[in-house]
Image 1 (tube, rainbow, N blue to C red):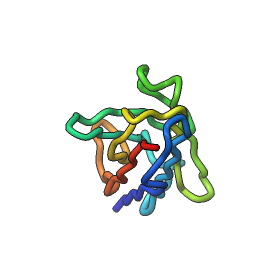
Image 2: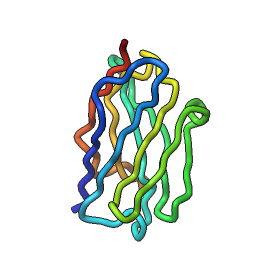
Image 3: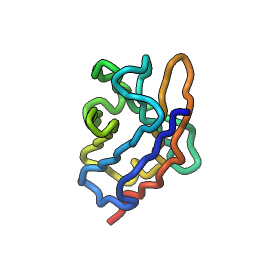
Image 4: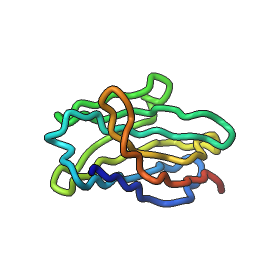
Length: 117
């Protein structure tokens, strides 16, 4: 029922800010007991949880990414967003949004983001 869709640019230059938006349909990000999460997978590497915003607006971040990561939401549009500042080529990855409630479900298709000049 719940569907998520990532959107944003596919190419970001080093030192810039990567901004992605996840649009949620079939459920409200404000009334579900979900942690709305961002996960990424660099080429040849495993999945990495980045952070999440809960239904009440509370935010949580991976300690390794916290200094560069910001997750926000627009409740009127039923969207939540990811901002990753000062990106480097190491941030090249497929980025996913997904709800978490004990496990991840209803993942978006993922969006490829390449950091390159």
